[in-house]
Image (cartoon, rainbow, N blue to C red):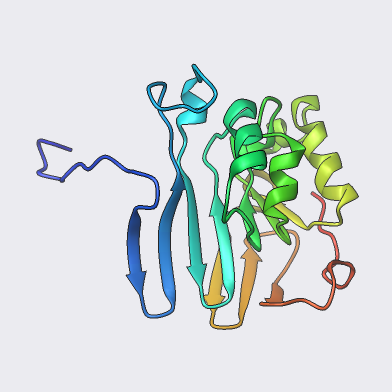
Length: 183
């Protein structure tokens, strides 16, 4: 990046990366071993937790967030509530705990994982969690590329294969009306 002249900046809590007409991209949380509220953490827990807000819709990007920081944020984090969650750590074991997912209270889950990992016992806990909450899931290793389009009062999700086109109002009548997609 230095050779190409790309500026590097250190991200910080509350940093706004983009603020435009009806949209904002903001870092909610980012920790290092030096400033971790839970003591030493592994590299996955240094993932940034970023919130995208477009109109009435919020999407939370969690990187590879693991159990220690995820558990801390479940108790002490603010502003985690989102309509869409990019599931931490490819949906595999050691990811953020259920209490973190409960705090986010997402209506839709996106999992960046190969089909083999998503169908492996390491991901069983996440499959069961989302199924028990009736939260639709799309996994790029199963459904291919997943396009999410944001509008003022709704969002649309369209995978390359499998589940078809899904459209959600910004404020759904109930989670039961959304349905459940399981790869």
